[in-house]
Every structure is written in C-alpha cells, then in structure tokens.
Image (cartoon, rainbow, N blue to C red):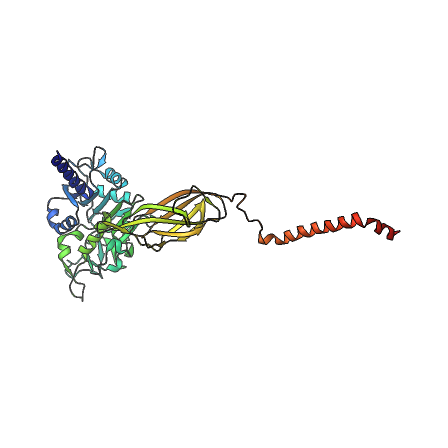
Amino acid sequence: MRVLVVLLFCIGSSFALAAEKSTLVLLENVAVKETHSIYFNMLQSHGFALTYKVADDPSLNLKKYGELIYENIIVFAPTVEEFGGALNAESIMDFVDNGGNLLVTAGSVTGDVLREIASESGFEVDEDGTYVIDHHNFDSVDGGHHTRLVADTENLVKSEIIVGKGKLPLLYQGTGLLTDPSNPLVMDILTGATTAYTHNPTLPITDYPHTVGKATVMIAGLQARNNARIVFSGSLEFFSDEFFQAEVMKAGGKAVPTGNFELSEALSLWCFKERGVLRVDGVQHFRVGETGAPEFYTIRENAQFFIDVKEKVNGGWVPFKATDMQLEFVRIDPFVRATMEVSKEGLIGTKFIIPDVYGVYQFKVNYQRLGLTRISTATQVSVRPLRHNQYERFIGSAYPYYASSFSMMFGVFVFSFVFLYHSDEIKKKAE
C-alpha cells in the first residue's frame, strides 16, 4: 500500500512539474521543428515541456474540464489563415486574459488570424509582401533588396531583464510592425534604425511607407494588466538555426557572430515569466516599538510598514532589493508618500508619522517598472482622534491667553477687595 502511495505521489509530482512549464508550439509545418531546433532545445534545457502541433491540427484545444492545459503558447506559423480545432483569435486572447503567455512570429506574408491577434494586442502588421528595408544597415550577403538587415543593440529597449546583456549585432529579415504610442502596456523591444522603412522591395515607392525610421518596430511586446506577457516578432527567421549560427558583416566591416540566440533566450525567458517576476509574500504594519498590527491607529503616532517582495531568479525566489519602491498612506488622496528601504531581513519598509487627520486610510504600494511584473497592494486601517485624556494639559502657543485670563481674575479680585473694604473711605474723601 505504501509503495502504491509513493508511486502515485511521484507520478503526480512529475505531472505537476510538467504542467508548470507546459508550452504549446504551433508550427507552420513539421519542417519548422528542424529549422528552429536550437531554439527549441534551448527552451527544453530551461525545463519547458514542449508540445508540438501543426497550426491547423483539428485536435487543438487550450482547455480541459474548464482549466487551461498550457501556460505558454508559441506560434511559428506566419501564413496560417485559421487555426484548427477549437483555436481562434478569440480563444487565444481569452488564454492571455486568463494569465497565459504568448510568443508569435509573423512574416512578409501574415495570415488573418495572426493579424487579428496583433490588433487585439495593440500591434499592427504591415501589408503582405512588405519587408523592413534599410539601405545603410544590411548584411553583405543580402540579395540586393537590402531586406537582410543588421540591427544594433542600441535599438533595443533599455531593459536588461527583457533583452539581456548581449552586445552582438542582430540579423533580421521580415515585415515591420506599428505600435500604438498611446497604449501604456505596449513596448517597442527592437526598432529599426533612422534609415529603415517598410515596403515591398519589388515595387516602386509611390506612397509614403507604412512605417519609417524608429517607428519601424521589428519586435514588440506587451505586459497585460494581469501580468500576462506577449512577444510579437515580424520575422520567423530571427529564431532560426541559420540566423543563430550566421555571421554578419556590414559594408566595409568585419564578420562577427549574431546575437540572435542570446536575445531570443532572454526574450523567451521574460515572455514565459522566468525573468522579471515579482510576488508579494506578506505585508506588515504596526506602531513603532510593537510587533503586531493594531486594531486602529491614533493621529500623530509613529507607524512602521514592511512589505516582503520576492523575485524569481533561476527558478528560485530571492528577496527583491528595490531602492525606488514607495509607500502611500491614502485617504482619497495620499497624505504620506515615502520611499522605502531594504532592511537586514530582506524586507522593504519605512517609518512615518500618522497624519493629524482622522479617518479611514490605506497603506498602498503600486510598483510598476519596465520588464517587471506589477505590484499593487492595499491594506485598510482606521485612524482615530485623541481621547479626551490624551490631549496636552497646557499648549505652549496658548500661554498669552492663559496670562490674560489670570490677569483678568487678578483684576476682578483687586476690584472686589477695594469695593468691599474701602468703598466707605472713598465716599468720605469724595464728600
């Protein structure tokens, strides 16, 4: 019996571990698995359980018994017009709304279903047949249309959490994206140089290109309000073995390896929440000198607040050491805003004086930084006025009033004494 229990526990644990990083890979055809084998092997080395399916497989489904089967989806099928089975653009976005992560690659020919996903995510894919073109930053082996581009790391988003620390140039061949600058959730991960634009290289330019210069986005990203992440690339070849192993050389330069593998690895780990993930393990607040949370605070008391934040690093959770996290003590508007510090125990906290205004307040922490998951906590407390026996007996600023009161009392006493005991003498002198 014990052996059976242990066996069932091991099987359940293995299933839990497999489901923890379960990833559905939708391929344009089976050959993509071979042409992008380095990328897939890299994901497997990081513990991802990959399930390969052709994009139009009629058995495709994302849920079983109402629960998501996968945590991540990779779509390496730029030209697919419709997904198979129960999959469509609506179910993909529902997957993201439920916390799933998505990595999609488009191309010079992009199917309608991917365009719809891009539109729902805040991106716009250029027309079919278009490429990103740059006549100043192209690879020396380019066929003449200058669509095989060499992108510098200077054009990457300024976040090591998202793109890593790679310094090697990047090789790109694909279409361009356009992002909505008014959308605060969207980020331009890799953009073209100032000389880049998108157009069909075989046709003359008669109209203004769809995207020009820095507005030409090659790889875009999005972190939703529920911290689900999307990476959308305009090039499937960017993740291919050929581009990983290639050497690039600009005109007049020397051949150097590409940084595609390093960037692809960093992007994937960020997209699939292996990097830049924060969680709150607890919140503490109490009066200075005490250890437990009180039922209420009284105005002008000294209070302490601590928040325990952990960051995911190499699969484990370590204390997050932030020096720019702020606490707000809010009653409709913030009455106190203080930058917190990291304590010796790894907690992030601060001390402050409760405002001299009673009411219902909240300890609020709202931390949003590029590449990191958002932290938003609110703890409600009440603040009461002083009791009648807690006020000061004598207030320093009121001493003039005290003096005037006593002087009036002294004057009344003198007047009464004179009136009672010397009034007859005063009358006689008056006569």
